[in-house]
Length: 310
Ligand code: ZN
Image (tube, rainbow, N blue to C red; front, side):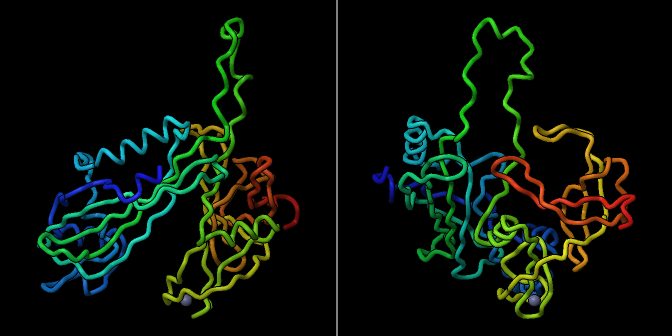
């Protein structure tokens, strides 16, 4: 697989549209970004739009190289049949302006050793896309995209013997598990806290604004410095919905999903436990507890303090 490193993943790709004002305006409206640099006759495109200019849209691209397909075939053949996107890193080297025509090349930058992850063993494949403006050899930005091709830890159950196939099958299905959280560099501290039965809120090192969920930077002042404060565990139901349909594996509807306002002022989505779903109310006081969902997963939930004097 190392032989695929350096081989092209896509060559001579062409952006479907030149950099243009309508797409910039839609992006800024969707993001709530009112920065003046993205408006007016001298507007530049927001750097974070980089991938918007290279994506194929629903009609796709036809420039994917055979090397990429071969590598995936090799991994599939070795049993690494599942895929999950893990992260993306971008570098912005110079601004793009309306009218710029986009070209790009992508290379298979690295294929990792076999790694063991919670999802299963597999290989990380990193592709790097160099984005250029037509006619200029210097990239305007790079986009690194990493996926994990892996062999799921939990293999599907083997087929049932013939004699059992006619029998009701519901009892034989392994119990579905709740989805696993995606833990990354930006939120690992939160999950470390959960493991120690502490609900940690980020506090900005620049302006002391509390924030939740965890983010790399402060929305109030932009600072990337932070520490944490431990939530007292007291809160109230700020809002809620009762989920009836569609049913998801591992969840038994109807159940209440609540937006909890913590005493510290930040809000988080969680489950209310200890109260029937139809007794959850806005303003209901709740108290943090930790729910062991299964052998690998513990979650912060909130116990409704109905009739307990809370
Ligand atoms: Zn701040």
